[in-house]
Length: 189
Image (tube, rainbow, N blue to C red):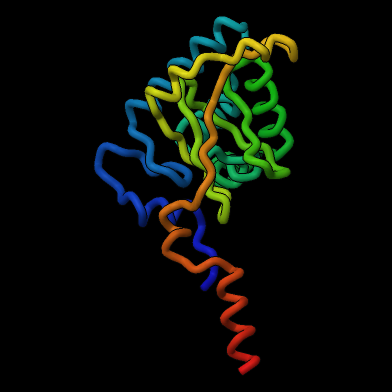
């Protein structure tokens, strides 16, 4: 069975309701998108960052998703609407927004940086099989104090919990190991 793209997996797993936007791959409530955009505009003005059309569209694409897309995914999402957009512009814009503290970067143990426009306190669930990253909110995790002995290493600024496991879609599918093992056993006997 071929891999199902994350956007389709999440659409199938969670469905779509009329109060959500299905921009990019993951549904986001329109109110949340508006809050993220308002925060971005305020922070950009505060930092004296020129709000170009491309920067606004790149941020809007990121703010409209909760799957923590990489630069290539944002570029692919936008290039049909913005044919003059280059992948380099997406990378530079995301780097600038990260350096200004407007977005954050996360890397769930892969070689590709993924970006997050959600600045509310949250944690992440990472699927160990397909690599999907989902936001997870938990009051108890939010209350975990910053360990004092971290001061020996430097100044800790945020604490996020990363939970690793298998997403709903991957739980329904046998692993590649089990598929290969069954195929091997059929050939052997």
